[in-house]
Image (cartoon, rainbow, N blue to C red; front, side, top):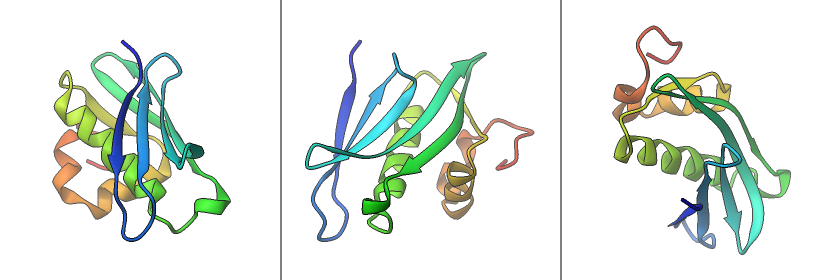
Length: 112
């Protein structure tokens, strides 16, 4: 299966396209075709472990990180029943601010 893309509209900014590429183990956010950020993950034992998220300085404060994490977690919810392990501090903080995604977090993990 190839990458899946989902457009995300944030305020007056151009569309943010978020792509999941399981072969590389990361979600990528692009704005006008340019890589704006990514969130790395690995899947094992029924869990998706988010390890690192990065947004290019040129896109800081534009909602790229939020679009990236929201789309990733929405895909997890729609997918195969994986539980989330938010090792990445950005993903953990985002989940902490969005309690409607808390149910995805694996029990006994920092954001649970």
